[in-house]
Amino acid sequence: MKSAQEDQYLEFVAERAKALYRSAYVLAAGDAHLAEDLVQETLSRVYVHWKRVARADSPAAYAQTILVRTSLTLRRRRSTGERPTGNMPDSAEAGPDAALRLTLLDALAQLPPRDRAVLLLRYWEDRSIEETARMLKLSSSAVRSQGTRALNRVRALLGDSLSDLVRH
Image (cartoon, rainbow, N blue to C red; front, side, top):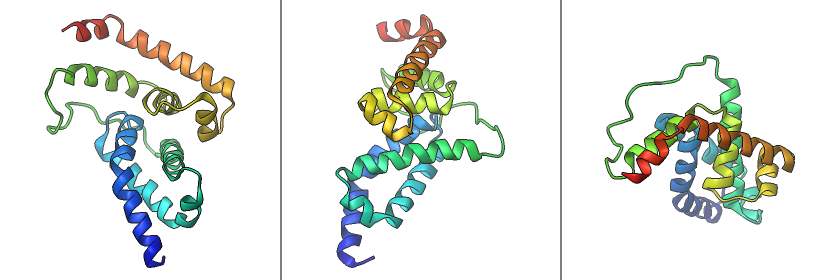
């Protein structure tokens, strides 16, 4: 890669790495190590295809698409169904929203990866139905139905616990 392109890539990484990590953390259902792996894999793929990415209308959206697809592919390729359990890492901030955040992450972790991806793109990233469908290679109606099903599942999993956490 030429020096000017490397500089563009490094600037892109500096601007987008934190946002990619936040999205990866949700896609990985709160697994910080997996989120770091997803971001690393995404950025390496962006690097390899930087000329194409840089020419895209939105390099950030291109990288986000790579992240979501990498997450879904990685879930399919995993040879074991291991799911780390136990306490959250010590780095979790204890604050007024900590219990709410942990409760939501636990509910999201119980969803299938594709449902989690739909919720991430539609509600966390605030993407349109059409954009989400394009990123996940689904039809618009599939995104709507999966999103509705996933939201209903999260609501059922949370029950009254969410309203208790929000009030306190």
